[in-house]
Amino acid sequence: MVISLNTYLGFFCLLCHWIKTGSSLNLEDPNVCSHWESYSVTVQESYPHPFDQIYYTSCTDILNWFKCTRHRISYRTAYRHGEKTMYRRKSQCCPGFYESREMCVPHCADKCVHGRCIAPNTCQCEPGWGGTNCSSGECPPAVVCLGMFVLEEPLVCRFP
Image 1 (cartoon, rainbow, N blue to C red):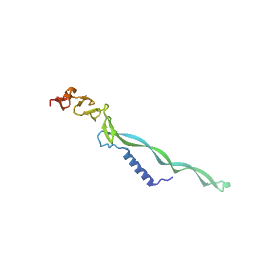
Image 2: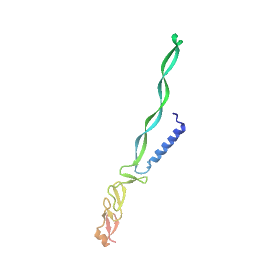
Image 3: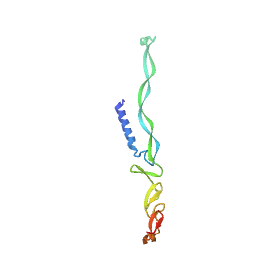
Image 4: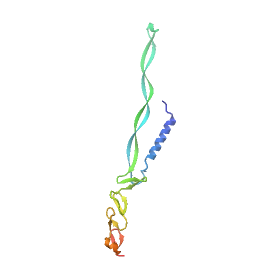
């Protein structure tokens, strides 16, 4: 079975496209890490295949008209399918981050109730909220309800 050069080129282009589109994260982007991954591909390889070659020589055998049959091992090129281990660099989000819309965003184990996750397990709270997951009001509730205090900066209240 002979495979044309066009078939090899087509396979190579398809493989390159698959590798490029298989990874949606760019290693240049923040919080993207990578590791090497091995994978197997089936390849067609050539090898020398032995066969018994019959040939004739002159000899003293009068019954065979002075021709004697001889054997020798010769080799011809044959083809077989084999497995080849290949390696590719696989991008993934660094520890503490997960992929969302082709970007690595931080993961907070506790949901940021009144804020947003800005780094792994680090919430940035909305004004008036604090604590590790932004669930605690910064000013005493009674004071906020009475309108006696307003928030100046996180964890600091002042008179209006």
